[in-house]
Length: 457
Image (cartoon, one colour):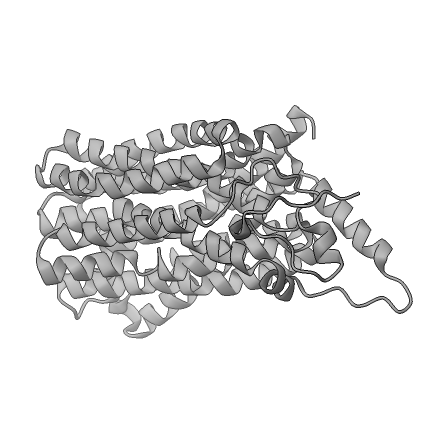
């Protein structure tokens, strides 16, 4: 793809991922700030927050199902169609949350409806990420794949920035009573406008050329007496199971640290330190802007020195930073709180930026959407989903941050071990990763085995 065409592809992926992450983070912030009062009012504040985060975790539980369904069809019929569907589902569910009746109006039905829409959000996001990063990875210049593929990753801080910015503006402009009464609905309803913009951009892009070539080769191989093509999910589990485990391990520190640094931060500052929610929102706002800026830089660095060194630097960095992070929060000084979150997210970016290219390079084209999505989303059930819950429970039990810090350090160690078991992938040709092996029904060389992928003759 030419540079202009590639920029259009990047824009389509970035706009979509920004909207989807906006929707997802908006829910997380609202869960920490108001959902405990609006949907779980019979509980004490901390238990109400735990219940609100439980509905937050439900969204993660739906992600692997989304990864399986979207991965299967994305590998069969193409990346672009599935990305349009995921955007419509995510945006529709978020808009509907803005219309929900609260516990005061419909009683126990309110949290049931909230949880249902949360499941739809999680299902859609489970299919979004893999398709967005693959569309860019499979279009881009292989020498700068880390840089270009990192741009959809900036959708996470961009969505965080948008969600936190809207919430911060509303909490600054409205009284607590007005915000709890109707103000919280506004950012959810705004999602409808954002989806229209996302669809307009996303519908204008072409399907991945690497996918089209792989599909054409698969069609050409079909003939009388030829074996039916293996289902993408079964192919992944048969040929790339080690790579799935590497991807899942790589996600642990990245996912857990992110939700501790952003979602749990709001609980820690408001419930433990008795600081205003505005303090936490503003700190995340500043840190997310820096996070957005550094992700492409880390992606470019991974093109120079490799995916693994940059990723390992981020994992080790987060593990080292987490104790100073809480020490800075405990000062109660806004500048130091903002510094704590910013440094944490810069180090997180060193993991998140190369992740897109790294996961894309692990799997053969005809099972890449499934492989990347399964590796990324199945791990989120064990990592990001329970992270705010576990951190909040540890805070309640030990009345301090030490155990939360050890939890993040354990995740960092797990990620470093996973990456130590993988080989470098940046030299791989996406068109030929595992292709002959997968075609012959043999086990494709895996990153965990440290082998070089064969080149298609």
